[in-house]
Image (cartoon, rainbow, N blue to C red; front, side, top):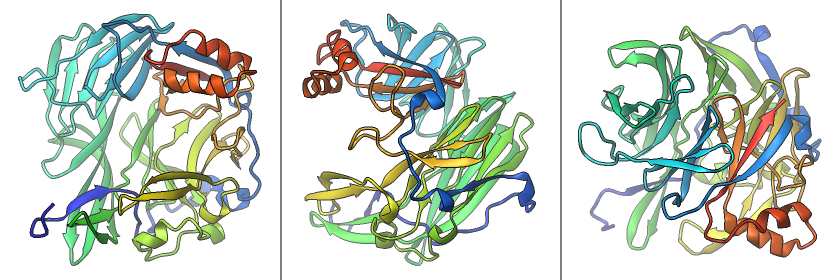
Length: 420
């Protein structure tokens, strides 16, 4: 980009200026308390059987019609697997992997969508709801027939995800504004019927430092964009805002309350962090990513432990200057037992691989990427990766048996875990 043009914005993890009070309720006695500080240094390998009763590896049928491009999202509803890809197509399979049909209404017509940011499936009737990157939601019935368009909530926000609960929608979003060398970010979660009927919302304002650097003759700006992630569990939607120490919930009436508070103690992030400090993995403070999962017994969380990470993973990738750099991944998964009130960091069951040890089938370490409509935990592995792993581990009976059913050009294998 030319120097006389506006800088381009690259959304990489950066920093938040201050840890701010975000609680909606000052009565801490009613909140679940997650003691992060006491869990540091006490991690262990955790077996999948401690949180789950079953794990299934389902190869998706591959033929000329069913081929999937790069996977973006996976849903499970009423015995059907829905997979969206980077071609904005949703492929539908039975729960044993048999191809059923493809769904695509890409276009500029009044009943079509331009792209897919996220989609949801209604368990009761099979309806498909698609949110475009613009924030517009388009509804289709189970046969793909157009029902209606729900216009973007507000004109100046950037919607990122949505969940339907009761008779309203919950949407997460952000908006930004540059003020004297800083970026003001407003992160929000809004419960609404339409733009004229807002039931409730939670808005957090923060200021993020930026880093400017010349790249390939142009000026690039790096900043943090870390919006709330929505997790539906039973009749409630929960979310985390990165600047907060709180997990919030929205119930079926639209009421917002504090559900869990995280205590970092001496590992709390210092105020006034700049870009480089936040990304320095040699320092002694902890932050939490906004994506998480919930089961009847557990919260599944992802922390950046930085210098406290017991098993950092090193990988070579392009840095800010687009040269090969060795990056240290110091993120560590954790499980919080809701009944016992104990947080446990997960040590790697296999060096370089994070997640639960699959002691049920003897398969790959597992960590969910998506959630099913009935609280299932979902992930996937590309066929080629399974084949390569089997070649590295010729004595692993389970992986070799799975690989024997695949070719490198096959569709991914979907993993479905049933929580206890």
